Length: 87
Ligand SMILES: [Zn+2]
Image (tube, rainbow, N blue to C red; front, side, top):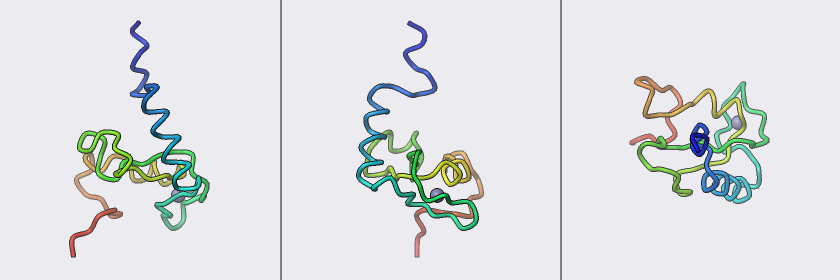
């Protein structure tokens, strides 16, 4: 019973993640220079999971290195790779 929230990996999240990966053709959308492997196996929360939840509109397919490098934007005070920039 205590295993229903394994690191937030719920059945609903796995389904959402699969949906985003298919939508983006399993191609990394972050494409960080120097780290990107192109093949998406992760899904990145562009505005932070605590902000948008698991809304596919704020999710992009990403490779593991890009996802890990960016991390959760809400947890970083200084982020050099802002996904959303105000011009
Ligand atoms: Zn990448």
